[in-house]
Image (cartoon, rainbow, N blue to C red; front, side):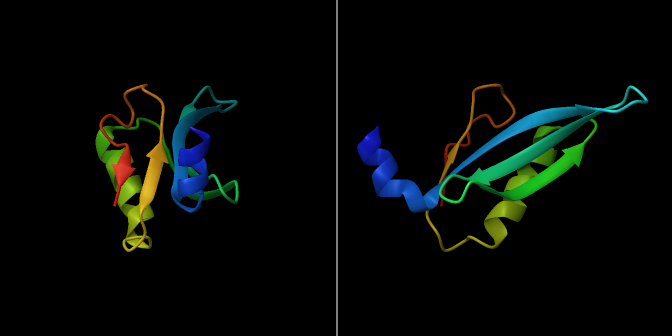
Length: 88
């Protein structure tokens, strides 16, 4: 695992969701992509009812500026990003 991380450190990103609950009892879902090397958020989107189409659009926006770069996207198995493990 350490060899993989060292070899791909410049192209590792991770994605996930977190929720924000408002005082009006409304829940927002925030999807974000984090660059591991810099620990900075490179893409995010907010939605009240996220779907795979929403996630797909966020990934397209993320890839738009990185189309010539090899990328590895790390995610959990919650079903929000099913089948997306490597992007190129």
